Length: 90
Image (cartoon, rainbow, N blue to C red; front, side, top):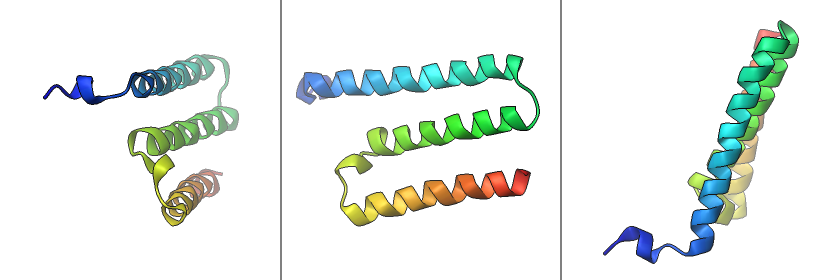
């Protein structure tokens, strides 16, 4: 059975829109790296990376439809990792 045939049309649009958002954020970080330097660049890169991680976790790992405890665990993990990175690199 063709996997594309069993996927709803709305799901393909959602996957494509998340992919476009990830590409946009990647290009935005690349462009910012030419304009900003130092600590400001680090904050921009880590902030956009955290947004990308949340998009990947919620969309491609399908945590959006998971139980609340798993959503909470993922949110705490993302916050802990990125706050830890800010603290270490400060």
